[in-house]
Length: 316
Image (cartoon, rainbow, N blue to C red; front, side, top):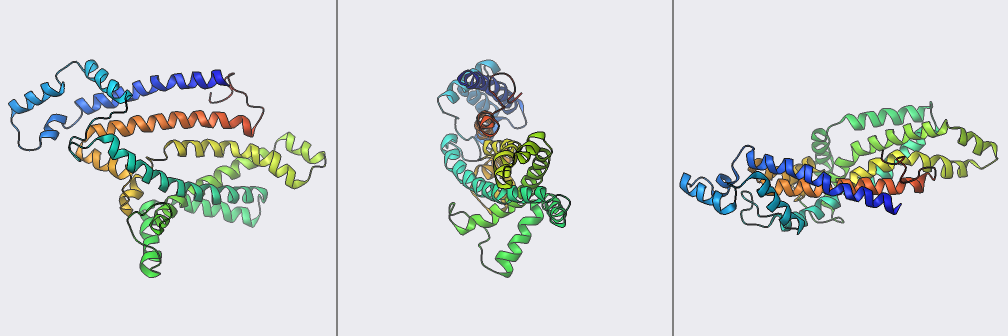
């Protein structure tokens, strides 16, 4: 297993170099010159050229990229050039990443806590009215966009009932997290439930399930030891990728509810063409997704001992 982990980690720098080089080049040659953005509306061509020389933007792109990677390797992502001029990008992201992570954790608890039991319940009652009702409910939940869910929840719980606040942020245990977490959770519950149901139905048809029951094992033991553990493998995969994007995947929700997270910051950076912020988010996000994928592969053998590391069975 140690060799497998090392081999996977060695791929991380390669992936980061490819992704960061693409985003870096786009930041240099894409719409909006970084120097003009930094200087604002009051500039002249001579001042622009002097500033480009000072910042090293006239050097070869590979030389510029090398300097950038050297800084990033020490945790320095540079300074914001337009949205928050002069502010360190790392310090901007640090606080906002924790805000987004808390929101996504709350939504993930809702996804898994409700979606997995609903999927298992429906699969164990395949063909019954309960199963049909659960499938219909998940289809509806997955089909409703957050643009409709968010205003509807605000109208009911903040407007009519007046029991929940409409916007803002106060932390994980503040009531202001409830509506955005539920808004994110509704489609997540539907996805988890459908995935769990499909995976459970596939496991129920396997020979080892019939063998376990033929041996006289109780239904509770069969469901817990043989059905649930194997049915959770696709669910773990989905949860792992959600964890990989824990601090970066709630753009619309953060914008709608006025939550000061990374998603909201990234949207502002895109509109302001603040490339240092965009590049930093891409680097951190890519790293988290790669590490999450590795974590998924390490969890697989715990759920199914037949899966072994190193032979290409996992993550291939």
